[in-house]
Length: 207
Image 1 (cartoon, helix red, strand yellow):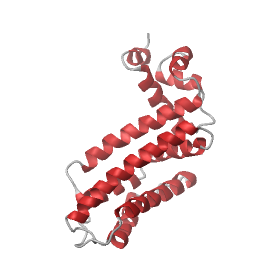
Image 2 (cartoon, one colour):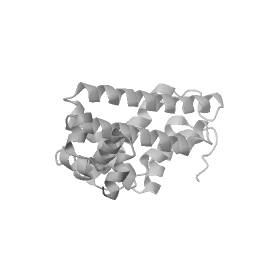
Image 3 (cartoon, helix red, strand yellow):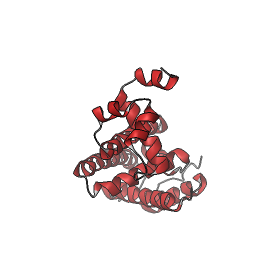
Image 4 (cartoon, one colour):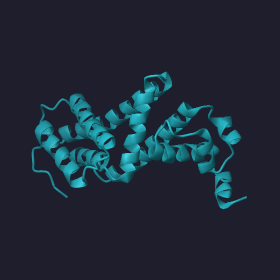
């Protein structure tokens, strides 16, 4: 047994398939990804893969769930020592930092959006993840409002949805154009949105 097969044998095959599907779909796109290729990337036979996942949509869903778990972990690390407005700012900056990894995350998300038009399960999963994202962002915004870090007139739910739409728009432009907006430029856009929409009661700490 080669090293890849040995490594695969020691972990949950579903996790290995999800991670392999994420890597291949993000790199090559959904149409050019095959079950056989994903199985090989994960270090398993095609028979082992189809035991757990019957088709490409199931692979895509697994890849999306893998990305969601990665994002949740990274967001937790980014915001764990912060709250209120600073947590909001760090959360939004993390999302729009369009490095290679974030570009892959966005690519998977937009592929799922495209496939969701034909797959009700994908729609349901995406709706659930969106609600989780809104709840996390709203909790930080509520804290900022209670602590009088932002204007008392801010509508929290509308602000969370507006921030999400801004991020998705920037992500879509980056993915479709292949242009990796610089971190500095992305930060500027986010900070402008914070200033205009949230109206902070004191200057942002630009660090």
